Amino acid sequence: MQKRYLMAPGPVAVAPEILAKMSEPIIHHRSPQFSAILQRIREDLKYLFQTQNDVIMFASSGTGGMEASVVNLLSPGDTAIVIRAGKFGERWTELCEAYGIKAVNIDVPWGDAADISVVEQTLNAFPEAKAVFMQAHETSTGAKQPVKEIAALLKNRENTVLAVDAITALGVYELKTDEWGLDVVVTGSQKALALPPGLALVSVSEKAMNLAKKSTSPRYYFNFLSEKKAVAKQTTAFTPAVSLIMGLGTVLEDIKKTGLEAVFAHHARLAAGTRAAVSALGLELYTRVPSEAVTVVKTPDGIDGQALVKKLREEYGITIAGGQGQAKGKIFRISHMGHLSEWDMIIAIAAVERGLNNLGFSIELGRGVAAAQKYFAADR
Ligand SMILES: Cc1ncc(COP(=O)(O)O)c(C=O)c1O
View 1 (cartoon, rainbow, N blue to C red):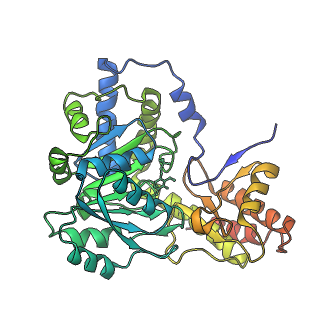
View 2 (cartoon, helix red, strand yellow):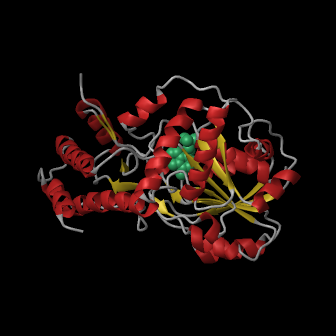
C-alpha cells in the first residue's frame, strides 16, 4: 500500500494520538462528565481566541460558522460591506445574497491585501452598513489581510461590527480578538487545530450578541442566542459532535501547554523553510503578503498546476492543493497547518522538484531541499 501524506491547507493531517482519543466510547452529551469536559474546553477556547467572549460550537464545516455570522448579525434588507480578496471572500457575498442582505463588495485583486483607505472610503460612503465581513487569511491566494487595521477603523463606529473568517489564521499566527476589537471570529476544526472536519467555532462579542437579538433573518440551528443560553447551562443547544469535541479537548490542552507563541513560531518556521526552498528553485510566491498557514507558489510558465498536483497525489501519494477559481492551474499550495514537521516540508519540496522535472520543467533535483535543510538546520 502506498504511503500517503496530507499537506493541503485543509483538511489536514491529524496526529495518531488525537485519532485514538476520538475513537474512545461515546460519552452522553447530557451527562455531568461531558459538561465538565465542555466547561474546560470553553475556557481553553478563550485562550486560543484571546477573548473573554463565549466561543460557540456548531457541528458543521467552517462555512456554517460564516452562515451563522450572517444570519445573526443582519436582517433582510440590511447592508454589509464584504472584502473579497479571493474565493472565500466571495462566499461572504453569496451568503449575504442568500438571506436578502445587500452586499457592498470591495474587490481586491487576487494575491493582494485589502487597501485600508478603500475600506475607510467605503465605510464613509455606506454608513448604514451594519457589518464588515472579511478573511484574516484568504486561503485561495495565500494573502494575509489587514485585520488589525480594519478593526481600528471600526473602533468608533458604534453601529458596525467586524466579522472575521479566521478559518486558516486562528491558531496559525497572532490574532487578538478582544484587544483588536473583533466582534465575530470564525474557525473550523480541520485547519490549524489539526482535527478532522466537522466543527465550526465562533467567538461572539456582546455587541454582536445584541445584533443577534434584533436580527429577523430566518434561522434555527445556527442561532447564537440558543447556543448562548446553553453555554450558561454548561451544555449545548443540540447534540454536539462528541468525538470531535473530545479530540478538541486534547488539542487545546496541548496548545496551552506549548503556548500560543510557540505554536505561531512553529508555523512561521515551516513557512520560512519552505519559502527558502521556493526561492532556491527560482520559483515565485503568488502573493506579496504571504501567511504562515500555507505557501502559495506560481507554477512555472508552460506547466499546468493541476497536472502537478495530480502527479504528486496519484503517483507519489502526496496531497498538496492546486488553485481555485481564477488561480486554477496557475498555482500550487503547500500547507503548514496540521500534524506536520519540518521533515514533512522537505518531503513536499522533494516531491515538487521531482514533479516539475517529470512534467518537463527542468530544475536541479535537491536544490530546494538543500535550501530548506540549511534553513531548518540553522540554530535559531
Ligand atoms: C478562509 C476560508 N474560509 C472558509 C473556508 C470554508 O470552510 P469549510 O470548507 O470548512 O466550510 C475555508 C476552507 O478552506 C477557508 O480556507
